Image 1: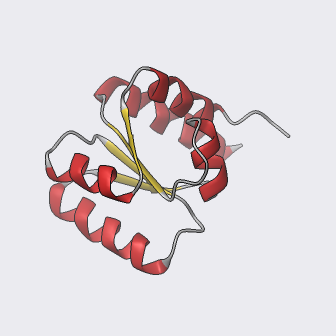
Image 2: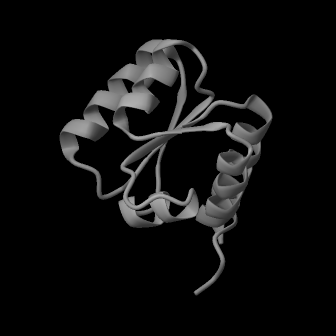
Length: 105
C-alpha cells in the first residue's frame, strides 16, 4: 500500500492538537469558526454527508469527502471517525495540497 501523504499530514495535525474529530466536535469547530477544513469519510451515511455539506456551505468552510471511516480514525490514533475538522489554517492548506496530489496520481 502506498503511504497516504494526506492521512499522514492529518496524523501530524492531530498530534499538534489541531484536529477536532467526531461529529459533535467537528460540528462545534465549524460553528465556532475554528475549522478551516472538514474531511468527511466517503463511507459516512448520506445524512452525515448532507449535514456537513450544508453546514460547511453556510459557514463557508472547505469540505472534502475522502478515505474510509477506519482510515480517517486510524490516522489520528482513534478507531472510527466519519468526520474531522482541521483547526489550523496552515495545516489545513497543507492537507488540501496533499489531497490534491493524491487525487491526481
